[in-house]
Image 1 (cartoon, rainbow, N blue to C red):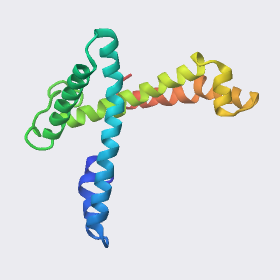
Image 2 (cartoon, rainbow, N blue to C red; image 1 turned 180 degrees about the vertical axis):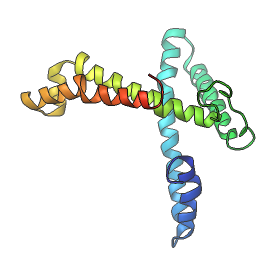
Image 3 (cartoon, rainbow, N blue to C red; image 1 turned 90 degrees about the horizontal axis):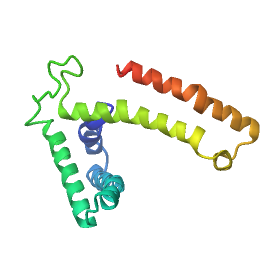
Length: 172
């Protein structure tokens, strides 16, 4: 496997096993990968925890616990899709992603739906909502280069490319 969980959990351990001091390097790599995953997870959970605190008025400890527990349960379901639940196909018989496991389904939603739509929303925000002087200053572009950049982001390349991505996965 050259991508996905097979790369990190199948191919890399074999590669580390063939290196001098591979066990030590693998230990360091996987500890750092776990720290990166944990810190990323905490920052992502903060959005939902803050919303629950502000809108639902839950105490922070309750919000953090509920969101953390929900994410843990979803994570366990994903892990089980590699073994005990490997035969579970949530969309079997629908014609769309029929053979997808829970992991495959979550992967599809995250990479093929959320990332392109999020990219399109960021492009729209930067091109139309964020004030021009702020954007131009952050990019460090002159008027001509900024006009070309804005044309590509708002009117041509980015929306068209994201549209092609969404069409290619069958969402449009």
